[in-house]
Length: 130
Image (cartoon, rainbow, N blue to C red):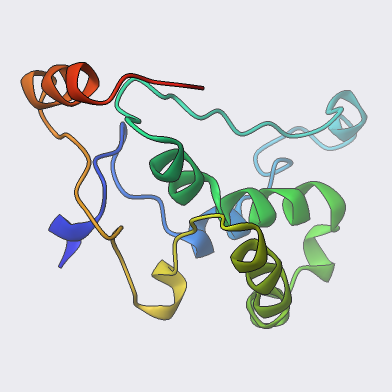
């Protein structure tokens, strides 16, 4: 069913992998003070709609926030996913699209353009307004 997942540069990135990221892994002891924070880039060359962008960001952005806020030994993926229910309720109220891959549910209601030609055709028919 992975073919239902929107096209993404670099492939599929599950929520658990984002949450499991530890920015200090592999660093020389004592050099952690040189890290000021974390960042999560979103390359949008193939993101055709605002809904597609939201789907690719949420709730991965929530997971990355906890990577920044929580010490490695305080992170708890089960607690995090349980707390997402409240967050996703707020997103529903705002009409924000999000990914539910961590629940085994994947894909948008539609498939965004996948090839360069399809993307070009889509953008001609649906000009960006954002």
